[in-house]
Amino acid sequence: MLNLFRITVLFFSLFMASISVQATNVVNDPIIQDFINMMVKKHDFKRDELKKTMTDAKRLPEIIEKMSRPAEGMPWHRYRNIFLKQKRIDQGVEFWKANSDILEKAEKKYGVPVEIILGILGVETRFGRIKGGFRVIDSLSTIVIDYPKRSKYFKKELEQAFLLSREEKFDLLALEGSYAGAMGMAQFMPSSYRHYAVDFDGDGIRDLLNNPADAVGSIASYLQRHGWKAGQPITTRANVSGKKYQKFVKKGMKPKVKISEIASYNVSAKEKYAGELKASLIELEQENGNEYWLGMGNFYAITRYNHSNLYAMAVFQLSEEIKKQKARF
Image: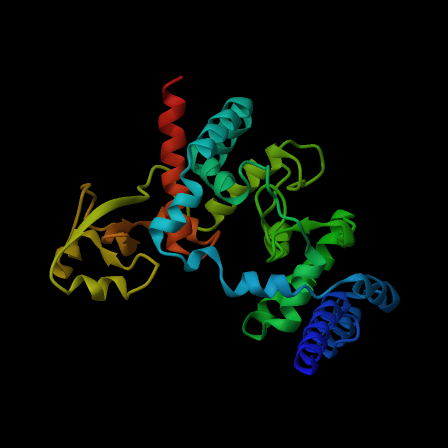
């Protein structure tokens, strides 16, 4: 009985400790105190208003759990299956039909194909259906305090969130997004929202939260500003042999090797391209071995949205499936 009592007390203590962590606001944490001081000095925010907002912000342990195991850590064959589902493809065709004018306008202005814009929207939020259920202030504050290896970056994003709320007249405490603080149909981080969002329908508001036109235009604008070149290839399957190709893979995500030089790495491309075009070699884990692709500049531009070859490939392949299905109608 004594051991049972001790076990019961232990579990109760752990339970109460977990509740206290979840219930703790962030305002008294030294990191947040330094942040408040910086915002007052650097951006002329009122200290009382900052403290009031941060008093309402909560530390959420589940955010750190999600940060520690992102989907991009999966093997490709599992990651792909999250996004390449018929329902999502159908939703993409549906969105295309309902928003063809703005999609075509964006393609014409920024040079980004309609299907690529749809691929981003589909992977990010299922075309606006799932935009995240965490308050941005909670997500960013929690990561700043409890995830040291990304604290510096997310502290900047917290800063950008306050600036965004001031500029766009947002209620920061009401803003919701992903566990990492990305917002709206296009899932822009606060800094991207401030620097790359566009008012694509000309109504005087850059609304990525609920406006399809602004989301479409902002995605296309973002990709163009991060290197997208109209009419240039994106990616193609590749064959490898021997071991030299591994040096190609290790060169990283940015295209660095000319097509004319890939044979020296025992790599060949399915499609034929100009020899001066540069590529990276992408290795994707399948259930029975790996598959290989060449990623050109436009593929790399997609990875600027999310720094992952898996992400960019999911966008590309979803876009291709949406395009194929749309062509049947």
